[in-house]
Image 1 (cartoon, rainbow, N blue to C red):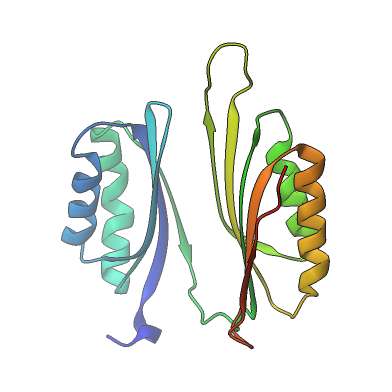
Image 2 (cartoon, rainbow, N blue to C red):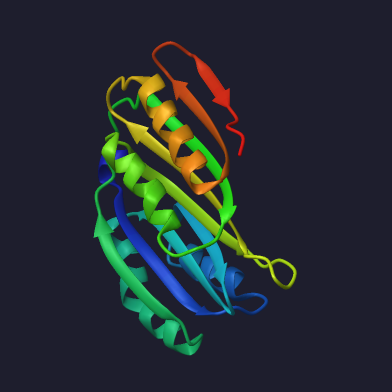
Length: 192
């Protein structure tokens, strides 16, 4: 089947984590004749969320759309589905990956997503995790963000802004900038 004949569906499954649940979902997807092109799984508290991009023929996508709600009810899962188009993306000459460890407090993640937005970066992946510490200390927040830009941004301006934000928040951070145009990658580690 050529890619132009492929149909695509994004599925999110949310429910209580338990052994075998992901295998049950992926088996159902396979039995419907769909392929999992991309997926993410995360455990959040006692819940898990499984996001998949499926591809398949018109019949296979229709079959999963009609049967997955019943399978979800049987497994006590909240299921959300949406058809989508998958197109070739234009080159993304700039890719930035930041990692930060900082004392946790409200709005910390927003400060870093705002930094990306101000520098016209499209966030492709965001992972955050709070680590509790011993009594009398603040929990530590770990943030990892990967973002893309469609144009050559001035790297040093973004790096300076990242360093300034880390300094302001007393954060340990690292930044890695990649460019497919010049095959250059740089990495910096601002101190506290």
